[in-house]
Length: 155
Image 1 (cartoon, rainbow, N blue to C red):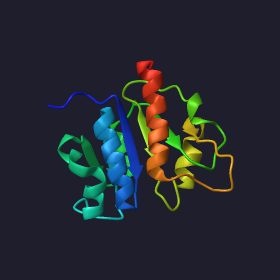
Image 2 (tube, one colour):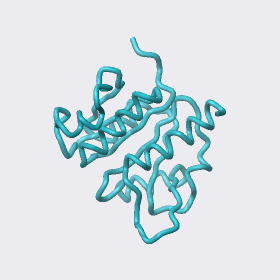
Image 3 (tube, one colour):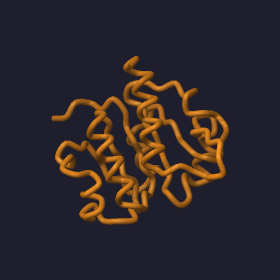
């Protein structure tokens, strides 16, 4: 039996196998549980996914879900923080705590507008000061997850 995770990382309809593989490695290294919300843009047997995660898959604590509504229903009462490049509140202002869920959209479109609208008070962004419209998904997850861990663990 695995210990309860310090955080949950939720990927909604991820599309690019190496991004998910990198995020899986991050979750295995940091004690986070990875939640993959369908549809997935790849098979979990994808060689690029496995290569990015290297040999850490046996230590990865992950769940697969048919949709975000099911995740929310199964984790009712668990604080959820949503992330998007289309909002203004920085991720450093989120009040992270043990057991929180960090929810990220897919590479091409992010989280659906309805999800952002329904959760506006709990939606954050990673500030950018250049001409790009978004950061790579695995980079974004790493930035947010380690800020949350810093706040929780005090390092």
